[in-house]
Length: 105
Image (tube, rainbow, N blue to C red; front, side, top):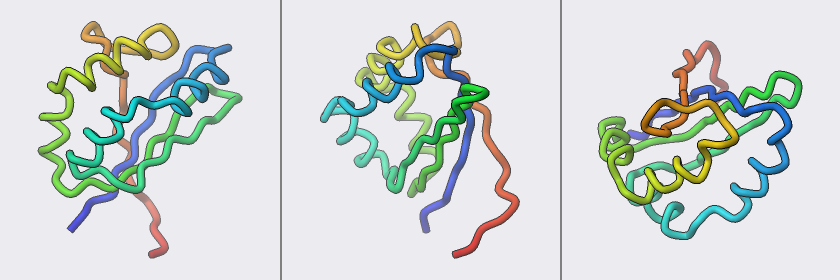
């Protein structure tokens, strides 16, 4: 059964439009990789005031996310995004898991 996950990331101020532009042109190979990994219903929301990004997704198997982080396409996307958001040394986004406190199914 798929599990719903939510997380937050931080965009650098002034890069809101650039973040949207890059995601509007997301690479087909990245889209395919996310789907192959079992990710569906994936959305990212932006709070323009705080520059917080809130991601919400369903994933078939949480352990598949570990493999995703090692994939060359994912690493290339992180390199592509590192200049506009908070990242770790490996360029992966600083991502904080969020606790679900309510769900209306």
